[in-house]
Length: 245
Ligand code: NAP
Image (cartoon, rainbow, N blue to C red; front, side):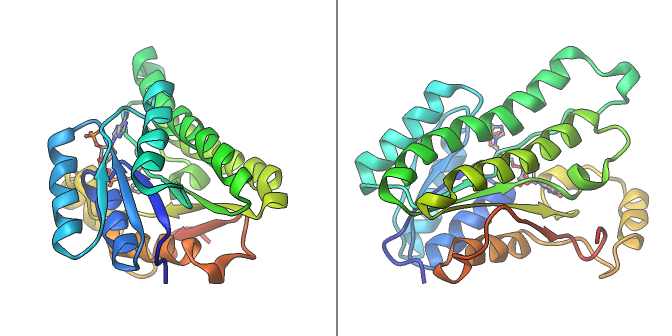
């Protein structure tokens, strides 16, 4: 379905990003993978190759504009173009607002929101010229709902939703679509730290009664990347088991 397409996935060294990269590759896309840890990225590249796909690791920090520019130039040098960008890299630095440190606010904004801006700016330049492309922003259900202890994270993820709609309006005339996915609670390193009590309390709030999987998110990314999703732009697709409607 994505034969000969070229996709960049940020935060692809583990968790949801890794599974997105494997899923896009399984559909035929060549994948360029970014994260700060080169060693972890290399392992994912090997996984993609072992499954018969083509992958490139471009280690870097999305919160540095030079690294974002390098990610795109390396990808174009290796694969010739960029058709799909998945802005997935993200972190949390939780704390109650009264005690939140400046550096915890800044780190989350710099990686989650500014990183997505830096990568989207590079993608927009290439995709506008080629008159097609897909930008998919991995936001979060808490960017829509809010969550105590996560003012910085929720602000960054809500910011992504506004950025998604603005970019969708700017790039529509070049047939570039821009959409966001808002995952609910997904089983990854990010949610592994929760205690059993918190996990069961959270699961009780989810109509489908369970945490999601990285595959649930990857399926939505594959769909939004496909030709069949060409008339969808500026949208937020909730993949959250019904916890926010
Ligand atoms: P994760 O397991 O912690 O993985 C985060 C990924 O981002 C890693 O590959 C990490 O690699 C990379 N990363 C972090 N900072 C980076 C930076 N400055 N530059 C480049 N890469 C960076 O997280 P996850 O649970 O898979 O989450 C993936 C995305 O989904 C995030 O945006 C998250 O906010 C969102 N999300 C997750 C959930 C959930 O329940 N898990 C729910 C809603 C939304 P390095 O550390 O090596 O850089």
